[in-house]
Length: 239
Image (cartoon, rainbow, N blue to C red; front, side, top):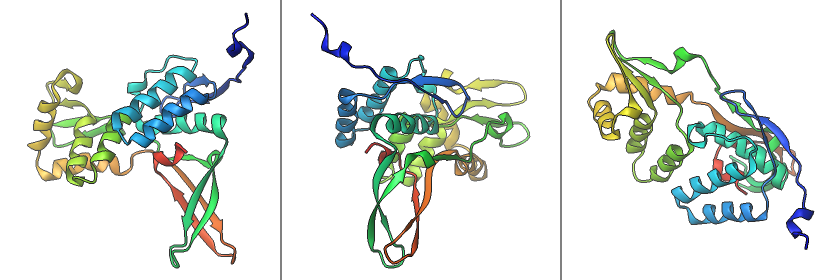
């Protein structure tokens, strides 16, 4: 007897991982995978959201991708590509006139999604703290970013601190290089906690120009007024 699933064919698409330029291939996600996403979103549980996105990636991408090594903007961009081919390019959103506060419903065309502030020069990840001490940074991954976003309401200061600590790749002097992943996170936190404020500010500045996925456009209201549209929240791409 034929397996009914064998009657279903799905197309394959190609895209690139922004940070590496590597071409990868994927199929659209199906109903069971969409349910995983929606349940995770409704749960508002950070671990469940990360697990759901990771599960979808493992199911849909043909190549084996080291999910945990992907930067947050990589995941955002790849997810948008998946969402477009699975559910369509248009996402319904609400825009608000900044002056009158009047709300309008319009469509966000995901084909217009862009990555801002992308950089790949090695020296841009190297933060020299003084003549003998420096830190190399890496962009945070999805798990770190979602964890920080969930904790923002509790303490913005603590969120920034956690972001810095989780993004340290190496700590170096003229004589040695210490790899962060070889040390306990408590040791990294202790190191960051004991930095002078001016040094810590240099690390925070690294994130001020971090790459991000963004949608920028304008909406023309019924009375002909142009209203800017700016969307930068990953959750808006779940819908």
